[in-house]
Image 1: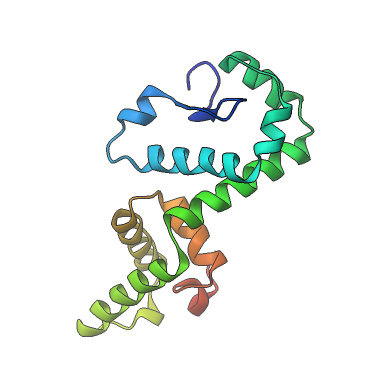
Image 2: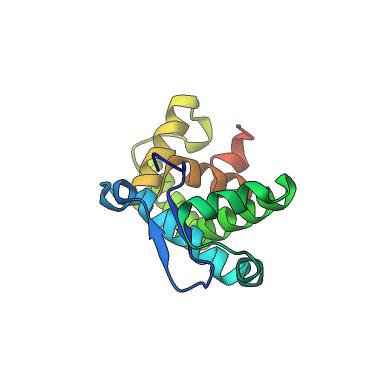
Length: 156
């Protein structure tokens, strides 16, 4: 991480994933889980691309990545991030967790559709903790899958 600003990488021969030690040891393991899922996505989605790249060390990996056209690199990363988010937070599971929170709110006489920004942030934090991912992953999944609070409030 310090030298290359990367959490993890997959080897060119697709046989190993290398993870930064601090990411590996981080508690809770949210970033580690996402990094593994992200690299797994490259394995599944981009095997042919990786096989065409030549690198053996993190230094060489960084140079190869910097050599890719920005649009190509950004597309690969977007696909891997999206795959990782879906793998770790399947829409049906996120919807169920969201419904559970809404039911608890209603049982406490709170209207989920009337949450302010602070209330929405609290819901996002709760979902992130329950699903062991970052807030950013939850926010993207809620928005992309049009799950409450995004479907009711159009926030963000």
